[in-house]
Image (cartoon, rainbow, N blue to C red; front, side, top):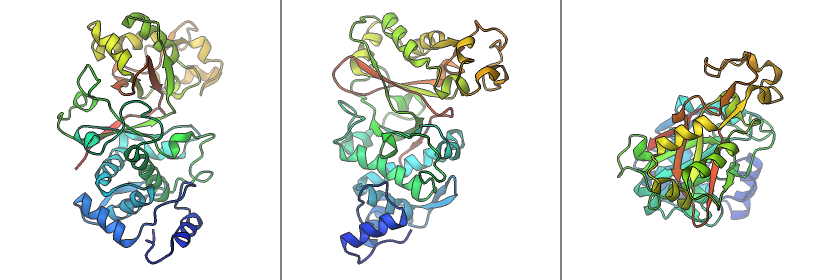
Length: 345
């Protein structure tokens, strides 16, 4: 990527659009001075290679990632979070090449935990998946620009998404740790509470779970399970990880009844299922569903009444807390691979 130096603003925009560096929106010109400021904020060498980004294997140096963060409108202090997100995306379990090139709707969701979320003023509350917060908007956008510009996943080219979704512009939130009645998500994953951690999920758009009536975990989670077992989603066909983001009011109902996250996972795992006969009507394998090698062996492919879970194991249901007032939560199915995390250096 050639850095813009002395161009006028209009020339810089024209160059970005002509070169295909933009997501369709104007970008901040990545001048040498701005890029150097971001590299300095990272504490790393400009030429350090963070990794090679699929599908085309572009070398993601710190300097090139900085250029994309500048173009996205980030502040320099956001840049270490962007790098950590890229590091998490490059872990093999995420299967970035497949996510980037699939006809599926998924795109990486970035979730930030720990002190960085507070220090950067990220939105973890009301409208956290929406507009209005610079850190959320530009960190997510920087990650997507890097995946496109360095990975070569251009729409209609390597990116074969049939539809895509608005998260392909930017898809980034923080967990609402203050409203979380359990331990923070990153602590559950083995990190210290004082560490800043970035988690990435190959995610569909959020599916709203509206339940204003239930006052107990059984009724609440029963409605959630019915909404999670979507026959047309990837997960019930190929498994992988899914994400449940509980709104604070729903989380309080569940935790107030003495339920742990593991209780929630176990309950949803048993209920979020569909009969084999229904899955044979469509999905990925259709009438050849009996050939599916991605399901657990205990599922009897010859029994139309066999109930197929949305994930292989309860622990594949990831749970965090975010959002504001109102008895809403969101379910975010995945592409079929794994959620991964990396600490912010």
